[in-house]
Image (cartoon, rainbow, N blue to C red; front, side, top):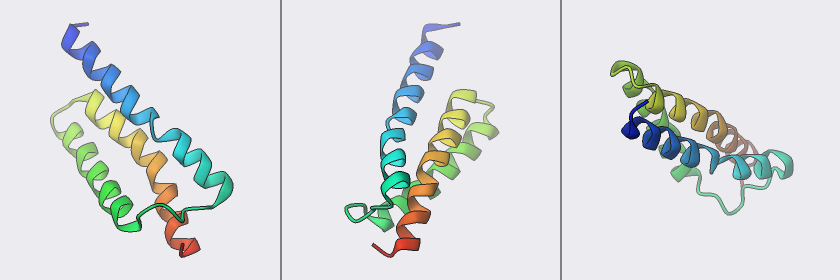
Length: 85
């Protein structure tokens, strides 16, 4: 594997996994009071577009990382709008 790919996968792993603690906290506490709903809605839309972009250019690091981050961010957005906080 080339160094560029290693750096890309490391960056994707770190940025993707950085959302896991927030997702766990929101899912367990249902507290989204300090989270901007508009920001998360925009973020989820951006992740979706990045995922499709990664598929279009056949880049597993981009598509995989954004799909996984989307799976962490989407429940936060859903809980945010369901609880109305």
